[in-house]
Length: 210
Image (tube, rainbow, N blue to C red; front, side, top):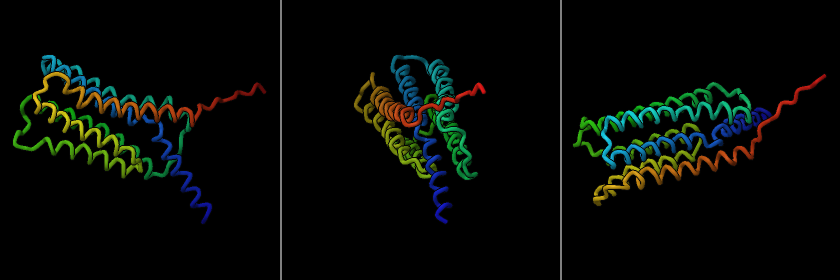
């Protein structure tokens, strides 16, 4: 019985280590900073069509951060772990959530810019709740509490933008609402990645001449 419990703990620790590389924080920081770029372009008078054509591809390209990061940074250090089926499903669902998050975010932004968003809906409250709920569910489902920090920063970004806009600020709304929270998340991610690289040095495979 003791051996079985220890094996479960080892498997759980290996699964948790999969998230220690900070790549998920980095990709969500990427999304936030793309929002900063979009807002800045809007503030400088760039048309919505040009703005969408710039930031949408950049946002989707950010998904590659996780793919190549896991392939060339995480896996060479942790190896290819054989998790239980429920663990694998959790990881796959998280990646689906990220893609869905991008699609929903882009859809809301486009609908808002094209005037197809119902103005009677109090989006100022709904959007932050949706954003935080997404990260809260991911934090609980993936046993990764740090997602809650990202969720709070995402939720606050929408509230900050509305507040700054209500004060008549024309330039710098995107910097305060998306740029600053995005940098905070990015710092968390890079710091986690740095610690991960120190904790798990890349294993060199020795080739025997014999």
